[in-house]
Image 1 (cartoon, one colour):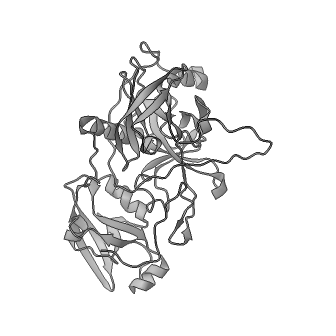
Image 2: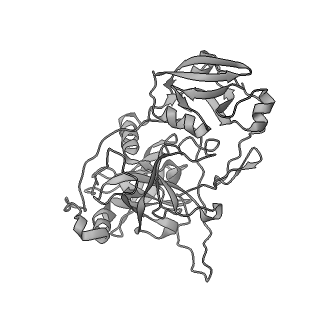
Image 3: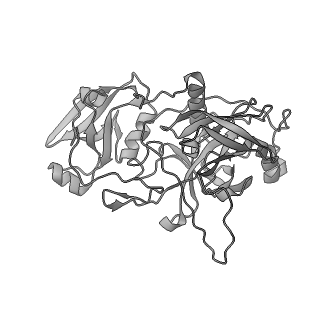
Length: 379
């Protein structure tokens, strides 16, 4: 079931796309799959870039894991803070790769010594075979082993052994902590940029109509560009703290707004993909939308905040709980829902089998409803 609203869906290569006739406030570009060659220099100060869109799915919750090694052929010494950024880059560069596809390129991070590479799903989307380039110049064939569009993560098996697996940090960094980004922006392989961690638990406003993966992210001002997707965000101890995901370009008025998937989330999803090729995600079974004054007027309700339910899977948890199209979800488990992305972020931290309570506005009624979450059905 669905309700008629002015909020339609429109996908494009950029999240500056029009959603229901309303231009999203932030033009968000995913950072994978740029052209395979760096752009030719020009006398202008700007450069034209493009990204790849993601597809809707669901959410997951952070996990823990991690182990360490360094350069190919054996462990390298742990990064020494006194050595500064050059030593960090030198130590971690062998663990960051470039992934070449028929449509462009992205980046990746070594996940295991036997050639397993962690990257973004949108980098390898539509491909079963890729080419993996290493910092020492060697390129080998890679096979896409498993993908998860929900979190925009994927595993690629490269035909190379004895790779340096870095440490994946199981806890979130602190705001203000130093950050390095390694990857291949715009086709410039083995590029390092630096900054700080600017924020945690970020969700991209307006992204829910295009993707369910852009929630609960790390924000950094270390420059991120197309081609960085799937690459490493590193702290000053040489640990992987995030997998580069997206940025908001200067054309949207942004200055150094980049986003990464927390390493703990990436590790949990990678381990689930290794186990059986799929990752488990809590499923509610509804399509959320922004509650605009126009929609509130159409529904005949007085509500200043909440998430409007655009459609419901009648056989899913929301449908069985009595949630209907046109309802406004005001809170979940006591947490105020002020945007669709907030609902997705809250679901990311839930598991199939959990029971969650909602405060629901329906016309002039206020309802308390409970939904029993299930594992997201396979597409």
